[in-house]
Length: 280
Length: 280
Image 1: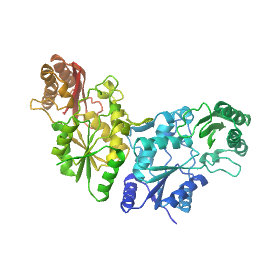
Image 2: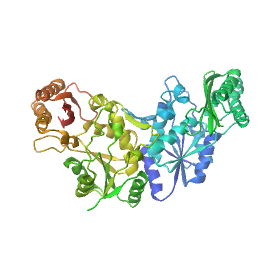
Image 3: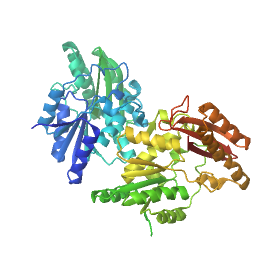
Image 4: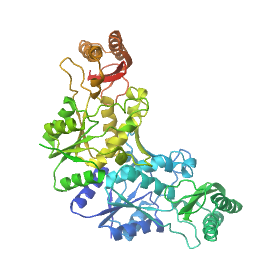
């Protein structure tokens, strides 16, 4: 099957509005491209639940800080269209930067508390960029449902909160992180890793799995759980940005792990920054 | 004719979606209530252009600073419903504060450049509150078209910019300021004025009309035009917050009045703060 490529917001809006007027449901899978099996699992789930699925492909400059990897972010438009079609997408919406942020652009969405700490501490304008572009992509694709990976867990919490707060009327589905056979969370950024770094990177998911085991065994002190995981990641030669244990829904800090919680981590190997998280 | 009163976001959304599915157009007139002839002119224009008109009535706390007049803002729900019906509204959407800003609410929309200076300088979080509530009211009422008075000219510019930037797909219509026979711009806040203050307040519109005359007579220096108006307003005993001459669409500063421009003023009489503006 071939996907239809749509490049402009008005064309995207009218495609989606026409379908919805016919009573058909539209699912949306926002991506920055360079698809891996994780993205494809989102597209498959959308295709299973909806009459039509739009994958958006936009490397969003407003969620990168000036020193980050925007210019070298990996791209493969032809490959992405093929993989999107394979997984069941009907449309790839791939607007240009000038369509999304024309000259004079100046409107931003912020989601306050849930954006703070963790990724928000290390990437101060990141979630402002994410919330803004997701709102714009929803305005363009007008979906009934949208699918996001739990890999970016804080992002998912930010988007859920924004959608509720602004009454956007889009159902948000979070899908489990897809992992390599050895446990490494799939990420478009894994392509940056040299073979030795690829081996080191495994320390992150191993430390989080170990935290799950520790909590199942009765450990309840979030500081100790996070501290043990951070030590294990550092031990493998990674530079730890943070490891935090938080309440699963609000991402609020926890004094004791006595309810659904999440452990979230970010670490750097050379120039590559990786994140991961798991349920506790 | 009676208006239908809707109190909750889901009920509002389904009312509007049903109509739009039937191919009917919905106009929206956002207000904070205490209707005067200016609000009614917006409702009449909406009723003329659309199959159905929703007036929203919500005194939005997020656009008031702590020291401002939120708690004493004038209210008259029964009178407002009657005046809205008279002017042709079909629905009054009057959500509660707890519907619009439930516990944990944390999402805000900012429109950067156009919110700066003038009202933005004197009311630093005002336009963040305005942009946020208008986005939420649009999400609730799902209109084709929305109507705003030019009386709040900078607000109108903020909303236009937000709607364009976020691809909201709502047509924004600005309607001329409705004035009392002597020239005072109609405002719900005029009710605060004591008789002597009511006479003094006239200095604002008089100074702006004089600026129009001066520009027609060939004056092109924005500093001098604004300075003359500010002096005339201060002369009448008002405390001037600002008088500015700006480019009419972007509200950017101007070196010479050689294109469509706007003069905008704010001044205080006792506890009452009034604004006005005119085309140059």
